[in-house]
Amino acid sequence: MKNLKKHSCWNLRALSMTSSSLLVLPLLLVTNAVLAEVDWGKIEAKPVTTIYAGVSSWEFMKDKDHGTGQPVMKKGKKSCAECHVSKEGKFDINADKIITGELKKLKSKKPFEPNPIQGVSGFKDVGVQVAYDAENIYMRFAWADTGAGGEQPAKLSVQFSNKLKPFRLYGCYIACHDDQKGMPKGIGKDKKLYGHYTHKKGEVKPQEKLDKYLSKGQFIDLWVATLEGDKVTLSDEYILESRIEDQNDLSATASFKDGKYTVVITRKLNTGDAKDTVLSDGAKVDIGVAIHHKGREGVQHYSSFPVSVGFSAEADISAMKL
Ligand code: HEC
Image (cartoon, rainbow, N blue to C red):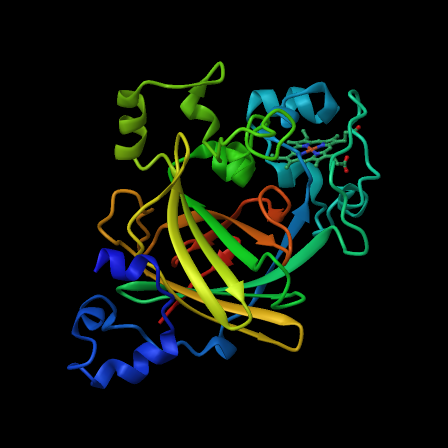
């Protein structure tokens, strides 16, 4: 079952259609028997702004290149949004000049984007809707894009964490480092995303420390949907000392129509896998959303500041209880 699911893409509509044909797919029904039909028209779509930040790593945040942001970041109290988003929701990051390679870092004068992209905005809004029932979470993401084609498919990634304060303040940025592949000090290396707290002086901490983080849920859960038109391929991963694939507990549908991607991803609130964030009624979780434009891979993507999702709990996005 594990292997079967890993390389497949499940289609919610197809699942509900097969729900009567027990003889055909008995295994599949054991895990997905109780998926609800969600009426998305009744659920508010919250816009989540994703930003093209180039090679703005965790190290950049704590460097003189981050100007007056630097000393405050070192204290670990203020979030990215507290400094960079106005009360009206306006972002002051010069993402339009980052993506074109125009913006240089304050002190080092190095470009925020060494491989510029011309003719596209530095921002991308993603409409996020969330619902849940006793068993599952249902998340719907919609954004404008150019669709299928090109060498690299488009990608939607969602990071989750509910046991890491730095993630609540800084989101995905705690996992993004200079020594990773494609980043300023990682060119040619094979290093992937990792939590800043899992390393000390550039070295991975001892295994027993990592085991402790994992047992306390102090990791980032990661869902990745790779999109080619209406085809979606899912990968269920987590980030601790590296980015690692775990048992695939996700199912999804995707469509590309009128210049817009829509992706619905479903998972059990509690999958039983120690490498998945446990979600529950009355609780909340912080998420970060990232979009890889078609034709771009690796570090070249848009990512959001962290936003919270509440399951009947006060948060930026309220999940509707079905
Ligand atoms: C204490 C306030 C503060 C916090 C917290 C903060 N920043 Fe900044 N940030 C700044 C300031 C001020 C600048 C402008 C520096 C300059 O050029 O003078 C800046 C610049 C930037 C830039 C360069 C682009 C530009 O338009 O100048 C990026 C990218 C950025 N910050 C991202 C982030 C992210 C991501 C976070 C959270 C992980 C964050 N910042 C947290 C204050 C902050």
